[in-house]
Amino acid sequence: MGVPGHIVEVACTSDHTQTYALYLPSSYTSEKRWPILYFFDPAGRGNRPLVLYRQLAEDYGFIFAGSNNSRNFSSDQAASLNAIWADTHAHLALDERRTYASGFSGGARVAGAMALGCPQCRITGVIAQGAGYPSGRGDSNDRLLYYFAVGNRDFNWPEIVTIRRQREDRGQPYRVNVFTGSHQWAPPEVMRDAIEWFLLKAMQQGTMPRESPFIEKLFQQALAEAEAAGNSKDPLAQLRAYRLLVSDFNGLKDVTQSVNRLASLKRSTDLKQALDREQTEVREQFTLEREVSPKLREFTDGTAPDPNALRLAIVQSMSGLKNRAAHARDDRKRLIYARAFDDLRVQAMENGQQELEQRHFLKAEACFELVAEISDDSWPFLLLAQTHASRDNNQLAVRDLREAVRRGFRDPDLLETDPRLQVLKSDRGFQELLAELRRQ
Image (cartoon, rainbow, N blue to C red; front, side, top):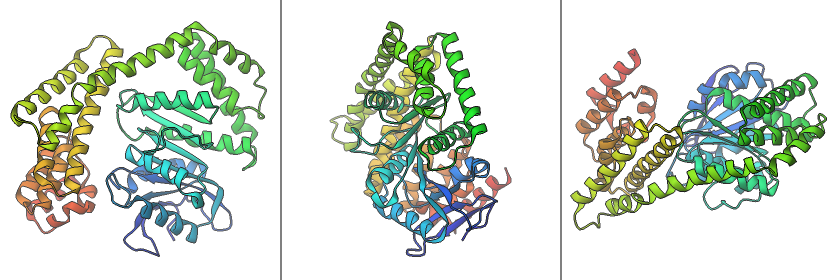
């Protein structure tokens, strides 16, 4: 099953409706056991993370498998999880002690659900990108290796900050990587850091042989990070660096000096003030969002006595946030405004997606049109195309897709495989659009 060195599409033996993208490293052979990393994309694009990260599979000898069925608002996530786990375990030579899961946004919560709610899956670690725990597991007391990656502009940044504090207080294993970016799959260098952390922890826990050069390389990197954090006088960066040294190299290197420095840092006024500033940012973002979130729910429900006035109020509030994010002179304020705007934008989009799932097409269309009015990205027009295609209005759907392309959309494969756009396959305008995208 699979072709080493190539991304292939696989249909599960037990249920051919369940499919996934699979990447086997070029050196794969069934004569040895391999670690596997399961991926979950919020739109069910199983090959997307594999394309983004497949060099890491080669570099570190990992099997990658990305579900095509698990997507936000899908009716049976459990079936997708069970199918991909069972099929890979039936056909591949896997190391049961090194089985991991990763996902972005809603997919991060699915990865967590696989680890926390699927005992037979025996997941060792989770790489959660752009989101935290699965729904209903906010007080998780797990001992999983949990790696969180989040952009500094990501609207879910407050959630990751809160989880970091919880896991630190409970003594649970974790690592947090905040990169420059918004709500997105993390850059490959962040995923490289996550995989190297898993390898280091495997050596520390004895589930794979220790490799002294690898350990020394990461140790020197951690020491350099700690020195840079000290020079920059950034208490939060120091906290990350020293706890990394203490927790991840204990038993592998002499960390006595780092233990003392970490203890001193935790008693310091500087760290307390930095943590307080962080919490102030969280509160400021939530305060901004609380002014608009109820209006979005009322708009979606269709219960407002004057829908046009409500729509205008939402547009004005969100446009104001967007403008402040673009022009704020203070970087901290700029990020707060940007996160608040993006969170409200996604709330409106997800409200529409829920209505679309329930076939409330007019409500869905209203939500997507609202976002299209205050946002520059292509996402609302992709969802408008899905809505119009579901109502058999091919002409409007193709028009929406052309607007999405005008706004920067460039993925013909996504259009071809989107379940809601299958009705467009015989449409001449749709085929012309696909051809244009493939030529670009």
